[in-house]
Structures are given as C-alpha cells and as structure tokens.
Length: 370
Image 1 (cartoon, rainbow, N blue to C red):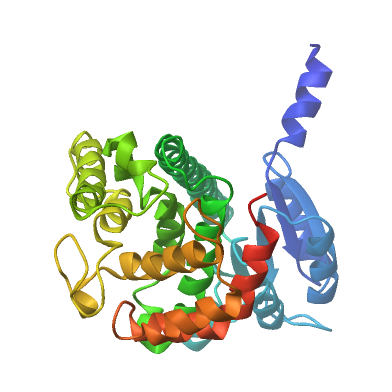
Image 2: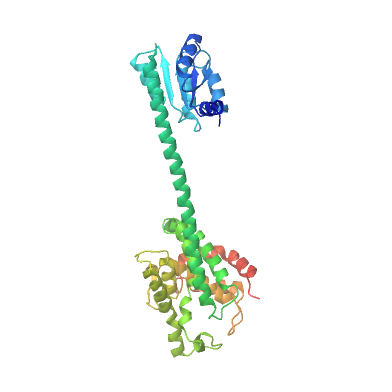
C-alpha cells in the first residue's frame, strides 16, 4: 500500500465533528483547529444540522446556542429525544456564560459547555475526552448486545435439549404401552389448552407463567413413563386386571417418579427442569377427594401440573378406542368429567375444560388414531 492510499484510509477513519454555528469567523476558526485530527462538517443552523445528522450522524457535535431558525437548545432537545441520535456527545459553544445558561444545557443532555472565546487547548482536550467516553460506551453496548444474543441462543438451546430429553424418555415408555398412536400428541395439546385457559383466571396468573406452561406441556408425555417397569402380562393384558394386578399397575407412578429422580440426581441440583415430569409421573392418578394413589393426596396438595394432566389423560382415554372398550362420544365424556368435578378432578380445571370442550373435540378428531 502506497503512502497516499494509507493517508486516505487514515483520513476516512477520523472521527467526524459537526460544527453548528451561523458565524463564518467561528466556523473558520473551529475548522482550522480541528482539520488535522478530525473530519469537519458544517451546518449554519439547527434545522440544517438535523437534516445532515439524519443522513449521516457525526461522532460529536459542537453546537452554538444563539442561531436563527432553530437555536442550540431546541436543536439539542430534538437530538436527545431521538433514540438514534441521543448518544452523540454535544458540546455547547457559546458566549452565554450565566450559570442558568450552562445548567439548561446540561439539563437538555449536553456532554459539555464551553464559553467563547474558545481556548483551543481546552476545546481539543474536551473533544478527545468525550470521544473516548463515547467509544467506551459504544463498546459496552456492543458487548451487551452480544451477551443478550448469546444468552438468548443458549436459553433456546437448553430448552431444546430439555424437550429432546423428555421426548426421548416418552418414546421409550410408548414402546411398551398399548396406548399407541397420537395419544401423546393429543395429551400435550389438551394440557396446553387447559394451562392457557386457567392462566386467564387471576388465581392462576402468577402460578402458570409462560415458562411453567412450556415445561408442563413438554413434560406431559412422561406421565406414564413408569409403565416401562410393569410386566408385559399386566401392562398388555386385554381384559380387566385382577385386584393384585391392579396393585402392581399402580406402582407405575412410583417407578416413574424414581426413574426421573435418579436422572435429576445426576445434575446435582435441588431444582431442575425435571421437577414437572417428576410431579406428573408420581401424582397424575391422585384425586381431588383424596381417594387416588399413590399418596392419597387431596385438593390443592396435589401439584397443579398433575391435576391438569389427570383430566387431559382421562378425557383422552374416554374418547379413544382401546382393546378393552369402544370410544365414548365427546358429549358423554364431557358429562362424565363434569360429574367428577370436586371428586376426581379439580373444579377449576373442570370449568376450564367445559369452556374449552369444543376445542378438545377438534383436537381429538384431528389426531384420531387410525
């Protein structure tokens, strides 16, 4: 690279100083002081300065106060009200040296205030200082934007890993269950609709935040993961289970909880994204009246995630064909669930279900097993 080209590049990289002043002598003086270190642009009033800045923002502005058309204070106010321009440092240059004048300049957001006649050494020093501060501020903003983007990327990545982990475990459970087809997909959609409907009610607005809903919906497929530990002779039996067989079948809740708990222990943390899968696997057969299993929990002592899954799972079982039964019509399923309000199911969740029952029907029809 030859010397001329190098010099041209160096000049292009110089900071741009916009001088806004209506007095030719002031412009000549300031341009002479600045031309060796900066690229100098000139505007004769505030209106022209705004127009120039809108096309190509400078790095710093030297702004006279007393000007025709639009004075310095008005110009400064417009610049500071614009998000794209508010961070450009403004140094007022003025013969107005009253304390009130200087105070007004700073209140409007000016970086500095220098009275005329200008001392060249002070002016150059202040410009250099404010450009350095702006450069540091720009660097921090850029770093902050990068960090926010990186946090967002990592958060999405972690959420995807969590969902893949849950779906992998759910797929394992499904291989041994006779409830194949779209059961998992339907259940997830039922749960999502119930969560969003409940969230509209003041009682649940703080409980069912979006991140909680996302985790509950993602966890729904794991409600029966414990069935992988149930013998085929019981799990795949086409007829009614004996009392002894049913007692063994009931252990799938504890088996599921224990399996997820062991996975959670590998993370060496008390609270992980597996909290909701663990709650759901263990408690989705509890009943509002306390007559469920495995713990006999009642009312709101049953985790909200498990209460929601309980209704979604039962509705799907009612309207789906099984080897041991034909599907119930949607209207009959709704009636059965309504009768179980306050007995099997949380009354609030039943209310939400009734409000959404047509949506449930549409989901069941759209993802009907072949």
